[in-house]
Length: 264
Image (cartoon, rainbow, N blue to C red):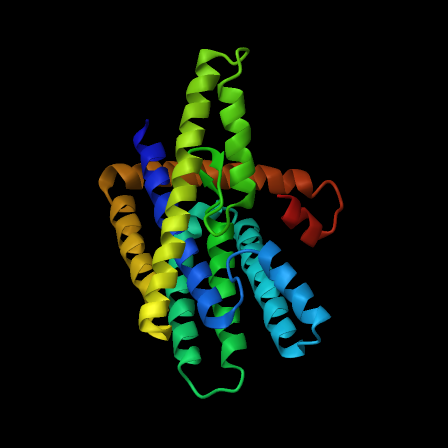
């Protein structure tokens, strides 16, 4: 395994742990999933059926803010013409601020403190999901598991197929290892996050911010090593050149800018 793939794997494990931690902790504190949409949509439907309008609004705000975070990263990538991975340290810093703000809001006397808490947590995880979507060329998610479990099962089935070539089996082994690791780490993070919140209450959610700070420091240190700086500069130039080429080509075809951004 190359050094870049190894670095991506550990980064994906760290972010998956944070994703599970925040999702479980957020649900224990506010009875809303803050890291994915499917479960929150179900909760919103239940609130609608039960005419619980305040809880319905909380669930809908979680969905809206999570999607806002994802779209914000896509738009930022387009405007800056560089891959979202280069924005990751900034995104993690923003996550730390949002999670800390969510804690402060939850411990305040504000009437809408649960709604504001959910909004901050959902925006934080939406940003993370948008900024980190690939590891070693493999599509990953670090805030929810549904799609990755399906991909993991398909890859496992293909790996045992007699028609699969040896090179493809090696790639499948690496994919299974990565997705399986993310799955396990996410569950571990959810368990730890729920346990911390049950034990400490609202302060338990700060553990996610501390974990993110540690990951952020490691990412910054690794990127500022001499070898890595040369590699990042080269990749950045290639990415900007590629994005400028895409931008010039897309200018030929008239399209809705919002739709074009989402397609990218």
